[in-house]
Image 1 (tube, rainbow, N blue to C red):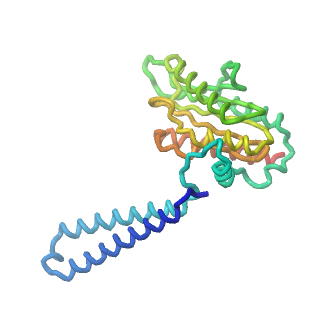
Image 2 (cartoon, rainbow, N blue to C red; image 1 turned 180 degrees about the horizontal axis):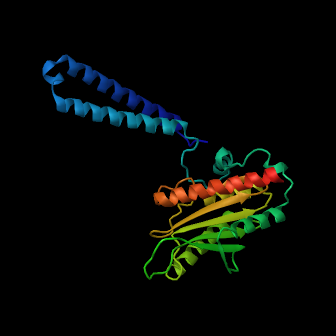
Image 3 (cartoon, rainbow, N blue to C red; image 1 turned 180 degrees about the vertical axis):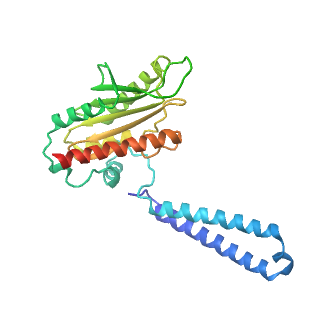
Length: 267
């Protein structure tokens, strides 16, 4: 899926690259034809730098050209916007997911158990299905140890209002515990087996639009696992997230999707 006007943007960028490339090659050719300019060492360096920058622009252009998604703020109350969000393939799980033999209550319990392993400690919380923390191995010299944190939240009638409320509750808990249990990297996974696809897509818009930076030096990365429609929503724009956090969230999302795939194969 691409936003409106993407063809015009691509064509305009392509024309700019053609003009810049043609101009650089023409100047280089003319410089070689003039002995006084051809013997200038600094001129060669300037052309090397110019061609390197041009090559970088070409790489960025091809990255944009083959990118499957153009960033867009999806409107939860706009059917056309939700339809565009529903068509994005990257949020769909692999083919054959719906045919596995796992029932939802069993699958939900398996997900909660999955995060209870590997050194994650459970915290009691009445608002969430489960909250887990794991201490990071970073010396703090007398300060409270840093932790990674995961919130799991299930709702049978999920919508964008509930998603927004729970994201704010996550932000509040992170802020309230920043002294006793500081958690720079946080994840929240929304779980639902609701069969109203449009309503779940609306809730997914709240996840996809989220910018993941509730406060300074703190990141909160949401995902929404739509069991019935076999979709996994996550934020599209993570540019404000620190790079080390961005890599961490990306790896954890890949691992979680891989676990879902293995569960389907094993069922």
